[in-house]
Image (cartoon, rainbow, N blue to C red; front, side):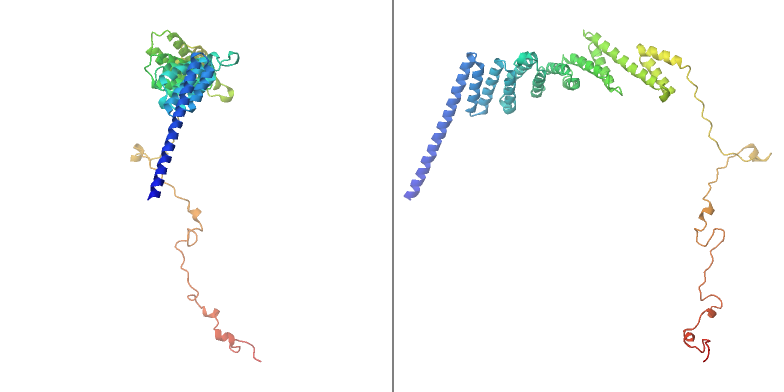
Length: 390
């Protein structure tokens, strides 16, 4: 009994010692974290942002909860931003958004990200001040990913589309504009975004638009802009783009008509149809005037000959005075069956003209069949078999 009591007392003492050590270690980590964070604040206040960022990074290693880690990451990122190192700041902000989304103050981080994009656009933090629009695009894509329905999304989409267009990536800009218009059609900046989309589509339909789908999309966006914003200062630009699209579509029809007038592809009816469509749909274009001249040079369109009547059955001559002579009645043609001669030798019983098949008799039923048969015994008897006698 005393041994068990002693063992239990020892276990309690060990547990208490472990708890004291853990508490001491936790308090030590907390103290170290607070001390490093205080050093970072002091260095930041003195303008030594690089050393302050390092102190915040070391302090984060001793943090015991995610809220504290997220706050230290934010302070570290702002120090990088203050010392004009946008690359390190972007990396820190990205880590904050990926690792601690629940403890990220978006109203504070998103404006900093927009500032970072401007720094990349202006060439800050790079050798000789070279612009890095690719990084700026990456920052705006991150902003739209993290705040898809926040304030300023249309403006961010406009800025991102402008950067994509400047870096020769108009197809991606078109996707960004369409997505923003789909989500925020009633935004005050939606009209400007629609005009930019129409401009990009107009440029895109200049080449490689075989079926005219891109041109139709451009016309739809530009006409919507003109109809919904009659007093907008940019309305003349939209009308100019509409006229430009019409001219290109008219030129395409004229090119098709010329193609079908070449000797190797001569199809004059198709060429006339394209020319008439061009004159009807795009009357004020240069191509319409050219189409009129070309159509006049072709002369009048040939008349389409009437199709001859289908041949019917020829009636037999009727005798005068008979009812058939007054009212001819066409008899339906009798369907002709297969030629019987083709079945020659295939039908049972011989040819088709032999009548009913013959009855085949067995050998026993024939007349005088006995003279052909010899009894088996006669074959063994030489005397009766007619052999010579010795």
